[in-house]
Length: 222
Length: 222
DNA sequence: GCTTTTTCAGTGACAAAATCACACTTTGAT
DNA sequence: ATCAAAGTGTGATTTTGTCACTGAAAAAGC
Image (cartoon, rainbow over all chains, first blue to last red; front, side, top):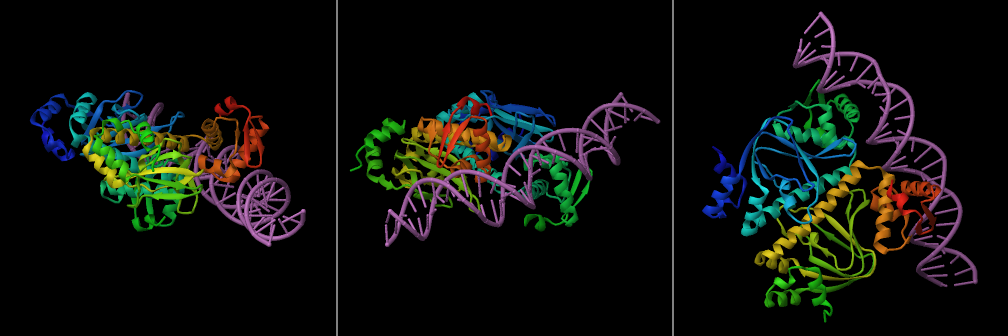
């Protein structure tokens, strides 16, 4: 069982080689492997958090949810990515509420909070790794914050389009206006209007459930 | 020289007692004490960062700046507070641009980046402290993010008012509409309009350069 | 003292974006 | 074939941001 475990962990955790044989065995024994079908939702925060998670396969979206029901994408996790924030609730002072939703069927390894905490306490390398991961996420969020408060909707929508293009490496994106709206932090109708404008400007081509990027450079300039 | 240094550091750094005599001496020797008059500006990011700073006296505002010149308050530093982010640029993955401006004349102790880095590498307690401080700031920013994307201007202005009230402990606030606008992330004119509404509703009383909070509970409900 | 300058507040007109309330079309399921 | 769900399109209205000013109060200079 847990085939692929060792390679995955060695790849995702730079501290892996610094651990003792026993520590590695311990992590391996406690780590659980989960199949999460598309649309599975996990909630982190308010004391509840599974532990450190690695996306072995698939893609997930991490977002915050408004009291009114809407949500805004913070970032996505791709294969090999580590969801460090889902374990950060083990830290004093870390008190945030996040949600995660699988965008495809996923295979996820989870190192339980307790096991990770033990590693964290024992190993300086793990402390440093955790710190750098959290700092990196901090930077990401600050960047996002900047986008939200200092740029207009059109440029955020353009940015979201380019990001999707980067993720799956082709110009034809199978995404809906609704998805883009969550990514750009705006309303679906607004995205519809802006996309139509983009289409008029020859930047994209729209069909139901699909957006084709015709002029990536043009989008980048917005 | 550096009178008050020892008490200040013991108070602000929980790891202080865990350091060796030599480490403490080293920090003390390298720490510099600065008088920063009101309106002094410091910039962090892009490789430039002084080190870890402690506000020994006074009050400072930390904010991000838009390309267009505007700025938005992230948080304030009061007496005894530590500006950990101003040293976080020593970490890989931390890549943010911040500004800080003294709101009153300040006395600031600065532990140079290099000295702090040494402590960080040597001591697990310092690693843990740094981690917790950064996590705490992360939480703060996430909270702010939520406010920005999920609540309307009126409630943000009300929140900013209550925060100022909390900071100086009285109902008569010596702040301008402009200050509130930066705190609430909106335009000065908008604040003016909203405050007038608040005044009509009997929540505040306005005079030039001064706002008196009449009904804090009422503001809280917005 | 008395100007002059700077800071602060107020206002109307307009633009951008969010919100509300729908209608219409395509797709997939029963 | 029919129905339900998902995705898209649009107009009307409200909220918020931006621009272009005005005038009042305080601070600084003489």
